[in-house]
Length: 491
Image (cartoon, rainbow, N blue to C red; front, side, top):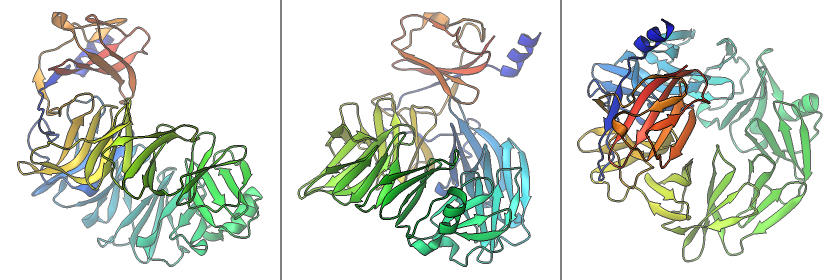
């Protein structure tokens, strides 16, 4: 009986999409064209989900697209132009409703917790996400911190008198203390005690909490729950989660620090990298200028552009820089939003899309796209395959577009209903494909959108799922001309 109920709740639907080798096609809601009027500033990725809002007068809608889903799910409907911004907040989406002067945290479709403020938002709201909450600045005279700890709201009465538009960084040291920096100068960093509603000098805080004494702070950055400081003599590494402190002697000056699993990578000058790990190693590039660089959050890689007298070179390495590879091809001056999908890297530059393939060849991806252009340099990926970006075309206006990175062409990702592709949607050990169809690849996602199993060059119509835990899954099957997605329950 339980299995029968599961099957009834599952409402099994398979979808197929067709190939369009010329242009990316906008992501559409399957029930209509509600996506017109989508805006760049109301797109937010939370884990393996992408949230975005659309505006078609007189209403707007909030959608969620999960990895493995065949179509976005509508989460809410608003009055036209009510939504000012989307922000990640724990596992929620933070939605600002300006006319109501409140914030809504959505956890499920049409289900939200409302956070009220005793001041008018006045259309001036600025938000600054932190590790465990978000700083909300409704206007020039009020500062609030919305904590993920029971959605508690702290009013920061003694927040330093600064222009809220200049705030550069905000981080939770723990549930009590906030680190705030609003410029690159030493005297523009401070720690805020949420419990006591008080400002604390950074140097005093370092001494009292971590027993670290510094005269000058020449550099300060927080990455991956590590506070990285430089005082002219040492690189100081403070682990927020363990409170462990390590010091590495260093006197060469610091422009920036990028922390990897077991080392730091430091840009000391425009011409040199310095790598610290049980000492310091200098890697210099005479005659070249390190123009731009980026890191991959999900892997231990560093990518940067060196500007020479005649041309640019794009370099790629791991975090230790013990192997540096020079890429070939079409190298831009600026790189941003680097993603690693499979064996390839993707990044954007001046609203153009680039790819670094497994042979380290750099090429433009968006060449040959008729009548479709990127309108933002931000790119997203929620399923380790499909690259999503905000763009424009004469036919659709501003939309979200999708590019299938597993194909040499652009795939149409507007899904249409098709017959079931699996022989049974309730399995214990083996999935069987109908009609003996052979597929090139498959991917299986759990109910949270996490990729749990994949394979290339499938040689038969049976897929072993015996090692998967019991629960709901989505499988995506790919052949040369057809793509299918189907849900199944593993006993």
